[in-house]
Amino acid sequence: MVATLRPDSAAGTLNLRPGAEIRDEWDNGNRGLGIVNIVGNVAMFVPVGWLLRVVLPQAGAAVAAGAGLSLLIELGQLLLSRAADVDDVMFNSCGCALGVGIAAGFTRLRTRAS
Image 1 (tube, rainbow, N blue to C red):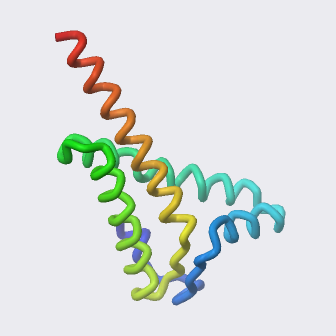
Image 2 (cartoon, rainbow, N blue to C red; image 1 turned 30 degrees about the vertical axis):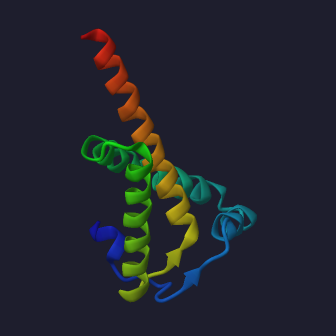
């Protein structure tokens, strides 16, 4: 969490164009950075989705809560001298949904085993 709110050189920028930052990284020969951006944002929210699914009984509510948390982080970044990017919210939400799905799968397996 600390890393997401630390000031950086892109202070106060807001990207509302889905995929724009990833395309820029890809087009500038920084494909590795684009992949790290995607994978990192997804992976960071898988545990969040898992935990929210444990706390919230409905999968949709858990994913919505994860997306809301990601949006709050991005707004915090914008207010605290960082860049805010819609891609981060999208990829965080995908990670959250993946975590919710994994948690639901484990719950089904545990229920069948009982």
